[in-house]
Length: 224
Image 1 (tube, one colour):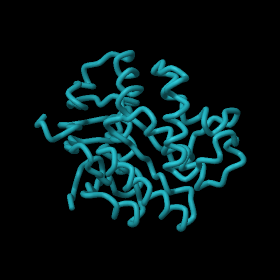
Image 2: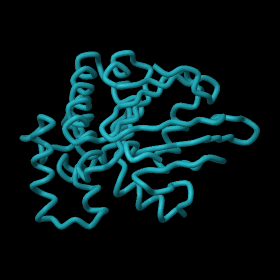
Image 3: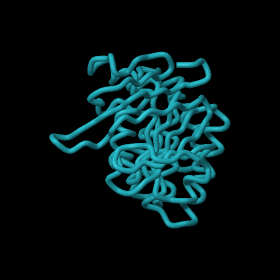
Image 4: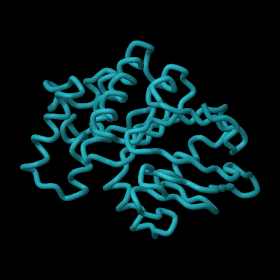
């Protein structure tokens, strides 16, 4: 991997039983670069994202993130890399309903055993950055969908990851909220120099990215 690439994947294959899902995918992403993964349903986008995030393992191929060969790690090592270096945003937010907004956001810091004296101000600063400075004590059910996705973005960024993965982050939002979320993702990845890999069917979401990889039948068939 060159110095400029924070993430490099080479020759990734993945099959479930006799059904191939990835068929030799390779990609590189620089620090601060936003990459969109596009393609029809069933093309392998989410499986690729899961492999890049250490949630799933490729059958063959290599994945290197910030100098660490993820494909060579055991389960405990993968879990550690996910906690320390990767943030993830989902279509359906995945906030814990019994925790307040602040508690949801600071959860990654708790998993990293960051002390409460540091967690609280970091959480509040990030809440203000995503426009929810006054909602720290609210529960997720008291928020709109757009507000919940802002909380999810803050949670994904609170531990200052090297890589941010987003799976259809605007897919459950109306167009106005979706545009706001995309603007926030663009601004915050620019500010922090975080690499973003974004799975999307949305042209608007792909437009915030520097490059697009179009997948079909588990292969990259076009790069723009």
